[in-house]
Length: 148
Image (cartoon, rainbow, N blue to C red; front, side, top):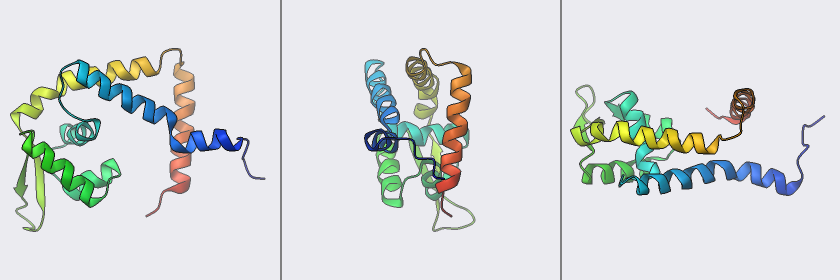
């Protein structure tokens, strides 16, 4: 028997990601109030580069669920802001690897503080148990629907 306990309006709200949208809007607002002149989309690219520099645009696209034109635009804009640089791959000249600049490295601590503050605002009144259940459910939904 299908597990469709949602009313149509609730299901639509679930699918559109109201919570995700609200968090993104608040994060963007908090970035602006903190004097960080980057978008959340740019921050998501920087976040993955802070974890591991030298990724290809394809790897960044896969990590952030963005298509090739979106990643190209984001990297172009980050390059204009002098936050990243493209370096041709030694193994494959068709591929550029993306590296952080000193300016981007200096943004890491402050932007992560703002992101953590935003997450704390979002999770006010939510217990650790509820967070774990939500993570499990969302992971299962993702696994059910991911495509290769």
